[in-house]
Image (spheres, rainbow, N blue to C red):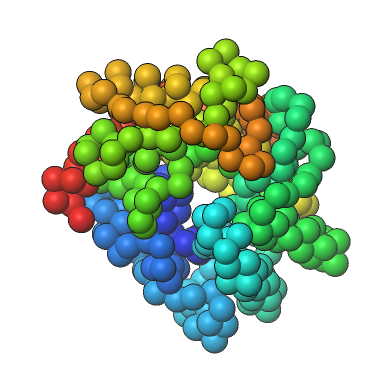
Length: 336
C-alpha cells in the first residue's frame, strides 16, 4: 500500500512521513519546496533508515501529478501542501486561493480519475474564526477572519460536496490547533522562512540569539495573567493523529472533521516560562498592543478524535519545549 504525501517536506508533513515509514507504509512524497527544504526529506530517510520516492512537483502541474499516479500504485493520499501564513494571505489573497484551493481541486480531480478515493486532508482551527465558547468542538459554528482560514474552509466545503456526489469517497478533515516541538532526534523541526509567525519558533530564535525579544500582543485579556491562551500540541502527537485518521478512511467511507489538540490551554507567559526552564535561557519580552481579531482563549475539545479514531495527545508541554530547543540548537550548529 502506497500513500501519497503532498507537502511531505514541510513541518507537519515530514514528521508524518516518519510515522508512516515507522509503521511500514510505503510513501511517495510530493513537494514544490517553496516553503520547505529537501534537507527534511533526507533527514526523514536518516531517521527511519528507509528510502522512498520524492518528486518536486507543484499540485497545479496536473500532468506531472498524473504521471506520478500513472507510475506509482497510490492507494490513499495525505494532503498537506499549501501556503499557511495568515499575514501573507491578507497581503496576497489571490496567491493563497490559487495555491490552496485550486491545488486541492486539481489533486481531487486526479485522484478521482485514477479511482483513489481515500483522503486525509490538512485543515486548521482557523475555520472556527473568533469562537467564544470553550472548548471548541467540531460542532462549533464555523467562521473565518482571513484568506488563509477561508481557503481551509473552502477546501472543506469542496470535499463535502465531493462526497455528496460520490459516497465511495472516504475523507478525514483534520483541524489542527497549535503544532509545536520537533522530532526527538533533533533532526527535523519547524524551519520558517524569515521571521517566524508562530510563538514557539519565535521564542527559540530569541533564546539562541537570532532575534532580540518576544513581543506579547496584549496583557489585558480576561485570563490568569492577562495574556492569550492557546492549545499547543506536540508535532509527533499530531503526526500520529494522521495515521489514526488514515486507518479510518482506509476502512470506511464518509467525511468527518476531527480536532487535533490537547484540550489544555497555555498562556503566552506560561509558554515563555516553560521554555526558559527547558533551555536554561532567559527570554526577554515586551508587551505591545493586541492584534486585531485575536481572542483571549482558544483550546480544543478532542473527544471526537479519541472516540472515533482512538487518538489522543500523549506528550506534555515540557517535552514540546525540550524538543523545540534541541532542534534549534542543532540547527544553529550547522545542520542548515
